[in-house]
Length: 459
Image (tube, rainbow, N blue to C red; front, top):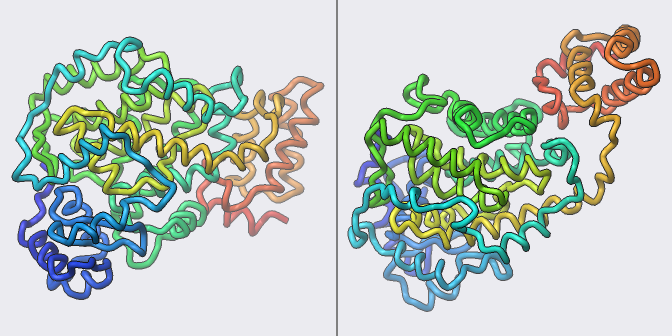
């Protein structure tokens, strides 16, 4: 069971916030709190208190301030939870949000309800309306139907590795900045003053996203895919290393919630399989994505890292159909946490649906400029994609210089391609090597250390 947060820590933080009716920033709280908590830990405590409804957060990033729940109504209402022009919640979601803002002591304890999953009928039940599915399809369509699964994802890989790794980690309270994340992923350099857990979390996301790209044509809602996603995302983060990729047999709890997950191992196995079966049967990719974000965390099939698995699993149907990926750009931590809490405690999906739609809109906007610059994919490169990747990796890992590389590439191309394609294949691989840099080595599964050693010999 996850470690319980000492109540005295939470009370101390609430007491500090209570002294500031007009709100107080993170730096001021850190100065006042006598517990000497690391920044990473203090931010998680604040996030937990907001989710529990014991304090209120207003503003974003460095402008965020924390207020007591007893602050004057004018102070609370004059500062919307999102900047103007961003997320707008439906009436249903706003009602749910108000219910969840009540203190935990005022919310009714509830256990896992099997009928919430059992009553769902693929392609009959709908978390996403037909009208909304059509809107999302129009937004996410990139004009690459009929091409191999994962084509668009691979074109965006350099950018998406950073965006999705950072945003998904940020939703878990990770304090890496976007630039620090970029440096970690491109150069392998961790940021000073960050917990090892934070660094590991981001590197794990990178590995999981690469799996989505590399195995795009084989991705399914099945045990192989979901359990391997969990194994990658949880590497070196679980108290029990053997729990990675395995359905749990231990009790778990949800901090800050009155929800009690299913605890009988045989039932967890049963409903995990039912989730995967229903998810795979859903025809619409956006319904599939939201279904995964709803049902996987609700069951808590793994000892930890369930929400992270659900966020990457939501990309499976998008990757398979070459739709714009979902990177959770600009989604506020507390809104995502409360929307998930609505599923846990109320079995209501409207709040999480609104967060999902907002996140997808922002993702599509983020990648539209990239999409316009890509042009039509080269059929030749698609045909020889795997061969090209392997050839580039070999040249780097063998630390070949330009002269030796040219000889080897010509020989290897003659083994892999027909006579009419050999020269073009050699040319394309050489072009890839010329354009190789620290920011795109991930697509060839090269480590920064391998690239640095090769670069010194590339003459």
